[in-house]
Amino acid sequence: MPREVIITCAVTGSVHTPSMSPHLPITPDRIAEQAIAAARAGAAILHLHARDPETGHPTPDPEVFMQFLPRIKAECDAVVNITTGGGMGMSVEQRMAAALRTKPEMCSLNMGSINFGLYPALNKPREWQHDWEPAFLENSRDFVFKNTFKDIETALHRLGSERGVRFEFECYDVGHLYNLAHFLDRRLVTPPLFIQLVLGILGGIGADTENFAFMKRTADKLFGSEYRFSVLGAGRHQMPLAATSLSMGGHIRVGLEDNLFLNPGELAPDNASQVARARQFVDGLSMNIASPASAREALGLKGADRVAF
Image (tube, rainbow, N blue to C red; front, side, top):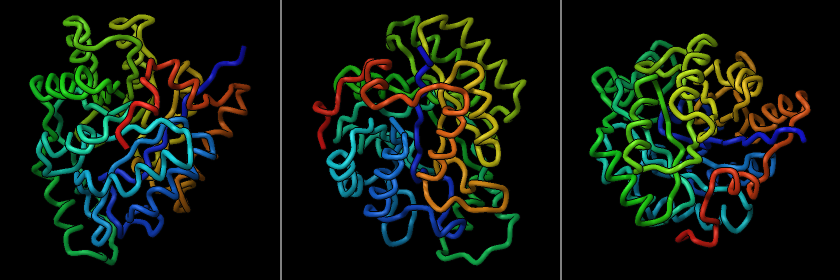
């Protein structure tokens, strides 16, 4: 039987700012619309952040999440994956707040602390819509995304054990895979593991096929058959690494959180266009797109009937 590929769509994120693209969804209505369209285009998993609807600044406010989560659930069957990465300057409690309230099927969970540099985006001249945007990017020059072992343990307990959430384990470098293996050894996580290999963030591992292959070999050594992997290629690396992942037995993640463009110099008009492009890769390799139901079964998820939105 042809292999089934899980497409994750990361709809808005907290990396890009409103002035970078008019197509980046900011308001709850636009986040919902683009998420639903991405699901209809073939995304089995929707990875979601929230933004202040007036300024576009990333927000951890559960009330904002609740303005779009119920609509997404009502209008599509995709798995909802809520961030615990949040955005720059948020505390661990703030980053978990929306997931603690809504009890989703999945959450992202960064497997370690890293430098997270966004400031090179200041090199491109642009008209800023909001005063906070250039300062936000500049502040990343002195920013460390913090997820200590204690932070990770807290998320695994309060979200996993207490609320039945399973995780997309985001690994930005090889050491993050060893951190995950540590928690597997301690039986704080259980297979099947869903690992998102993140390449191309300034502060993490570089986005090239040699690094990807090394990450994959390391995961094979540590986890054997007990894991599934997907690949996030930042920026222009998104689609090339997606194609590479398919050739190596993996799944793929696209979306405006990770890359604002559809082609060189051409802004993606929405998230669904990136999902459709990824789907062309899958179809071209005679593979099948995983449905939300298939993704739930493969990843051992609790089901949409057990969330709190």
